[in-house]
Length: 425
Image 1: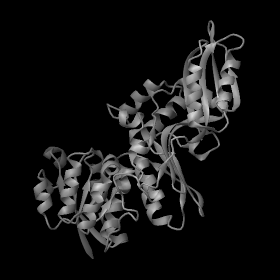
Image 2 (image 1 turned 90 degrees about the vertical axis):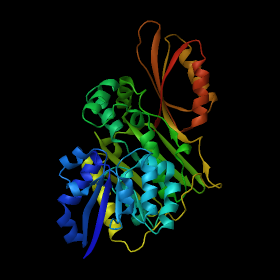
Image 3 (image 1 turned 180 degrees about the vertical axis):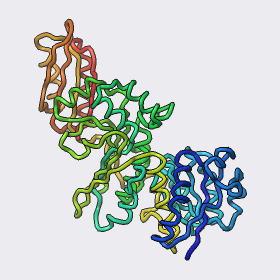
Image 4 (image 1 turned 30 degrees about the vertical axis):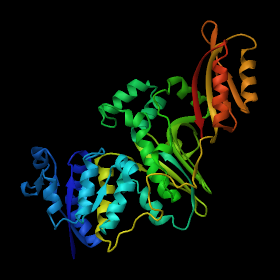
């Protein structure tokens, strides 16, 4: 039976979960997959933490040179996170003839183009199933199960932190600030939650997923990004009144050479399957030209789900005689023939606070009409004093038309503020 030696770089939450699975399920993997996978080395700065996890002292190292020089190590798992030193360490491992498995979505999104050629030149593998959507096998689905199809659309909830916050705001009536604090206490959100709540995490993942789905480089810099920090309790209530829930969605579409990629809060109809994805769970909806619609659902983060995806890659890598790379050749920039849509189409929820007097609503709707934005629904609520909130639900309109209309509406003396602009699925 083939024996494969593995090293883990970084024994934090995800690295620890990976170690637990590789050791705890060793016999199961050996029996069912026909490969004997052993953790030979663990690279970390904190010796006591590593030994406290039950790692043998002989397996501990704090030297990247020792890891690179060890000819018996076949696969290296990177769970350090961040760009550096992870990028330098991964390149070093690839150059020393070791395949690499990583969960590092930021690194892959930003430097995939630099890592894959090194792996290819040295005849080793680069695997990153765990970089997107935790334990949900979305990457393997795209690369191993959708070959018969042109994937024309993918969208979903791919950040568990924001989904948890929005769920608490929707179901418990929590404020954004209170829901964020609870997410931090439970370990779903970092002390500095910017990567999650401002949409960066979802943007990195969408860059990877849409590149694989559409067989072309979709740089993260070409993705429209908007986070959830401006979502209010009033937005949540309005969504409910109109038959929607609010989710942070990552959306990717390709039609011929036109690609649309965006991350933003979205009104999702309550009868859509994504509307029922609660808490820290994730889900991705795929549409292929022949298979039609597929949805994958599961835990999007955490030691065990992410560790499960990492170990899946380790087993997949260990059983391969040759390694495969992207069929389109990932690059730093998008192909010159690809057009990235900025004036995409959507329905919109708009909230405005305006003077509560005759003629004001007519002035606002006139501007919307002149800009080509057709109104589907208007809800005017009683306000306090001379101002009152007004909400609009539009028919499908162009992004630039809506933004132009809002700029003009905001200049009206009778309008105090533009409170919300949220796109609808």
